[in-house]
Image (cartoon, rainbow, N blue to C red; front, side):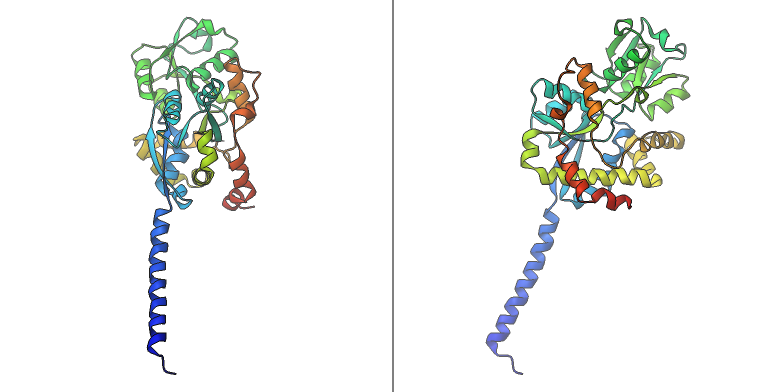
Length: 330
């Protein structure tokens, strides 16, 4: 069969269109991932799922290109979020609850920890909680998880908050330095600092996580951003869930990422950090309302409804679609 010039031209045109379409598809795929700036409030093992998410590109598979920035302490993260500098922050839920209670339009869309992963550590001469009476406990900043942890411990020890003093001494390294130089008598820390503190002879007085629910590391957005960008936030959350799954199922890979971001080489410190946090991770980052309720009680707002501070609609969607079950199997 002979192919006429017109038919040949038509076929060639179709072929060119297919090529162009293929190129545009590839370019579109590369451009699908939208820049998504996320801050995180502190360098400790509880940030591991977020670091894994970024390092392995989990959210990027779902159209979200993560950029991470460290902003120490909860309140500055909320301020940056409200100022429009960020799309989302991963920080202490208490900062979001305090802000929202004061009228800030922020909401919690997911939670990695429904209990505080913190311990109270004290100088070698302080071996029992009652010895903290009249002493100074160093915290990061007021309005975050540190002072909440101290107050939970004081309550559990049946002490009066007036029995101790709290001093803002900064981030994890600054608090450890203050403890070493006797500027404070005790402080709040997590791993790997707890491992290092024990090696230096410090005493662990309490694991705050044993005192009940108190929502901690959470993913927080503004309400307007949630309303206008649900697909992006959903893509991010899917990446978070994959990051959590990776941490729970890939020990060696998690070690490597911990070493990089914590900048520690001590194998025991890395393993201790991993074991402390991995066992606390749930399969899905759902916020426990009781933890929000306890935050509200701690700020004298116990009459407020915890549901007003969280939005689990995207987690609901992800779970209904079978995303979590597919990762873990039946």
